[in-house]
Length: 315
Image 1: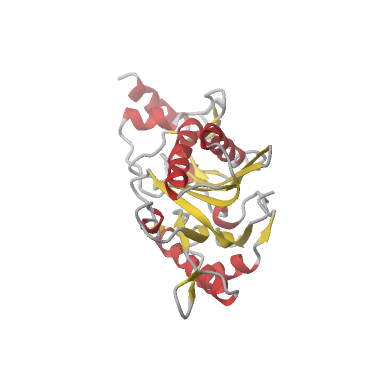
Image 2 (image 1 turned 30 degrees about the horizontal axis):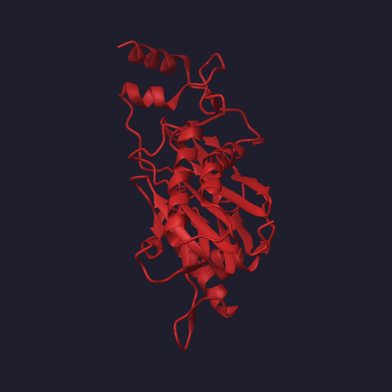
């Protein structure tokens, strides 16, 4: 499955942060779409179809907010040592894009540094679609309208698709302000009321009276063996946000830095519309997978606080 890609993780379990490196040694056509208003990103301008560099060697999904962008430099250093990168003349320059989530308040203040990124790249291997609270998702949480005291833990979300030689995978680090929503439109991960029913973050936000912080972000990477242009890769990244809208509520708020990368290794010619039909639901599936099998109960708000919200909703 997607043998041209290698995936590696570094996880700091004690401090609750980490980094995931997605590598294509021969280079992949890349695209990106940033819909969130509070992103922490690296090299996204380079992925614009109007820019000259066609191939990307790695996408890095990390914790640590803007501090964690440093991890991409470690991935870059490792790839340089391996002789991977854009032929700039005398030297090869690895093209490494990335994005980070805000997980600084999950445990202790910590972020994946250059050495963490280097270790993630060194550990990368083909077919490594392992999920769990690893890599960039080590400190990821959702449902944070009421702050970290009520946040719900997520894991690395992974979803794959294969048919007639077309291979696609989506890897997501889900760290949203909102709740995770199932295919039936109901909340499957979020804060609960005293009676055990979910309390919608969207309802709380729309009622006003609670001021969220820009400490959220869901970041994903699409991988495919399809042959795509940069424009098509950017379109796929853009369409993946439809999957965000299906599986997160609310989504793309002023307090989220949501971003999606797309990488196409180019081995398989494909009718592009097939991929546009696949990507939104596959992305939604990856997000939902981030809360499948996670241990621990959703936290319940107090009867007093719940009573206040009920009064607000009746206004």
